Image (cartoon, rainbow, N blue to C red; front, side, top):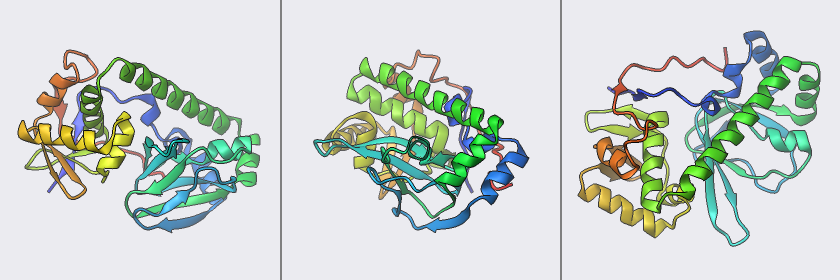
Length: 254
C-alpha cells in the first residue's frame, strides 16, 4: 500500500492546474465544448511545429512536454497532469506548436477546437484572466528555475530535480519515495541540460551512496537527506520536515 508523498513546504502557484483555478460552472461549460480522447503510454498528443487545431484539457494521466533544438538536443520542459491545459499558446497566437506533448501513462483528455476555445474565452473574462494568471505563473517558475540552474553544477541541478519530482510526483513506499512518473535517463538528462551518460554516472554515484534505488523506468529516493546536501540543503526551498498525509486535489472532471 502506498500513499502520496507530501512536502513540508508550500506548493508553487504554477503547480495549480488550469481546471482547478476555475469555478465549477465555468469548468463544466468549458469541458462540454469538447470531446474525450484517450491515449496509450508514450503516445504523442501534440507535435512540435505542427499548426494548432485544438487545445487539450487533461482529465487523467501525466504527460511530458519536450522541445528539440536545432542541434537535435531534446529538452524536457515540463510535466503536465490532471487539470492542466496544453496547446493553448498555439491556439491563441495562431503560431505552430512550440513543443511536443507525450503521454507518460494511459491518459484521458478533452479536446476543444481552437476556434470554440477562443470564442469561449472572449465571452468569459473570468476564465481569460485565470488563463493569463496560469501563463504568468508558468513563466515566472521557468525564469526562476533558469536563474537557479545558472549558478549550479550538473550534479546540483540533478539533485534539485529529484527533490522536485519527489515533492510533486512522489509516493511513500516501504523502500522510500518512489517517483510515480516514469522518466527515462534521456528525459532526466533533458531536464538538467546534461547528457544521458552524465545522468547514468550521477545515478551510479547516488546508488553507491545508498541515496537512490533504480529499476526499469523506476526510481526510488531512499535518502533525500543526501540529495539535500548535494542541492545546498541549507536553502529553505528544501525543508527537512515532510508529511505522509494525502493531498486533496480537485477532480478536474467534476
